[in-house]
Length: 297
Image (cartoon, rainbow, N blue to C red; front, side):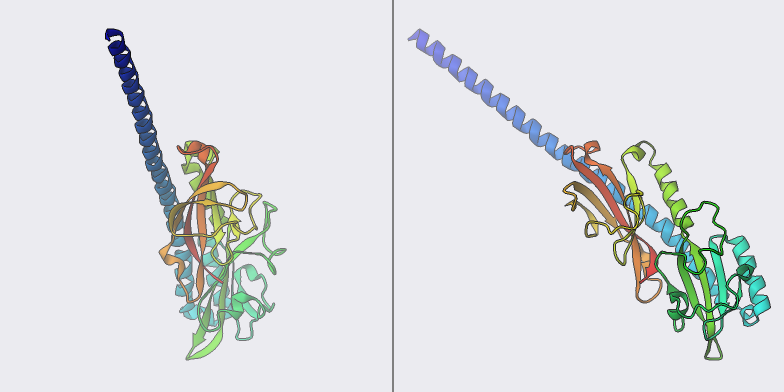
């Protein structure tokens, strides 16, 4: 009887010890999962904040250039080709991001421009003229067409611009367009700045700028530039599986200045990093998105 009681006590003790062990493992797992989820949310929010900061920087720059073009729109100096040329040259000297600025007549012929480039040429078929006859126009990022061989290009890289143009109206009559090509190099510089601010994350974090019109990657890793982003974009942060079969943590931010003109669309920015640097899995990459500058379709 005593031996039976001892065996029963031993079995009971082992059962309790096993139960305690299992409960400890379960609680440890649940705690670690909650901590991982909390840390993942923190990372998503942090990358979303980075995207918001990039959005604000790009939005502010684009908005500033747009406002400057609008201010020029009302100056009497644009009524005369000689004074127009002098004014535009001065503006370009002070704001080199304007790669080219020009004034056209009502038919789309350039009558005055920075350094005389394209004077006498017609831009009547170009969106920078066609889309600005009744309201301001801000175009999407595009490669140089008429100016490709006319502007200095020390880097040898393909020249890219954002068009900003406004109608010139005198006494209720359309007189022409003030057309400008804003170098996309400023966008690249902003992106380089944000890459530098990532410090220790830079080895596994990529920043992108994506067209809000067609999801085309405008800036980012070389192998993705000019290609559509393989996912849809939604506000907030979440986990997505992309067409490459990999899983990404995504944080999306939308800039307020994207609606500068009616019909305008935004560009989008995001940062990515492998989930192996995140708490939950070895095959997640983390991405953060945000609408940035105001680019019209």
